[in-house]
Length: 219
Image (tube, rainbow, N blue to C red; front, side):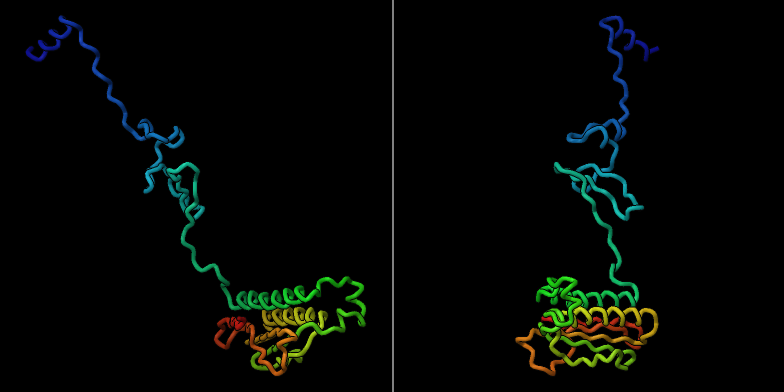
């Protein structure tokens, strides 16, 4: 009976307002300055802005930065993205060799000759020496294709031939026809060419333990 007296007294004098309803203070209803309705309910990041839950299918979360601008992708830690097998390492190394030869040839103007000049055995493409180069191809210590690693002055057509020889040697090694391959290359300008230089500017191969060999002695 005593508990009813204050309530009746309130109603009799002025009529009290209904008690304020209890608000649900879940994250979906809490207003955070700078956050739009689509962002509500998202966990806060370290930077103070709202983020999203990690997407493990993509390998990392997308974090929404508090600064104007935008979402930024935080890349996950990755294992080594390099070649996974010795054969893949050999292929990448031989690609470096052939690219070096082709870039050198292009710098000397070899790519300016048309098909007619290339087919003409008396043209400058086939007759004029433009650079010195050598390759050495070994399979398990045995020389193959007659390339002995002795540098010699080469024409544009001979430079292109070196690219083809290297690509064939790589294919032979990958197919198992060249155990323990070791390929070496050197390119020397005619102004610097003396003769007898070692053919060790680039080396690509696979050793007896199955480990890749990749050496680049270019300055």
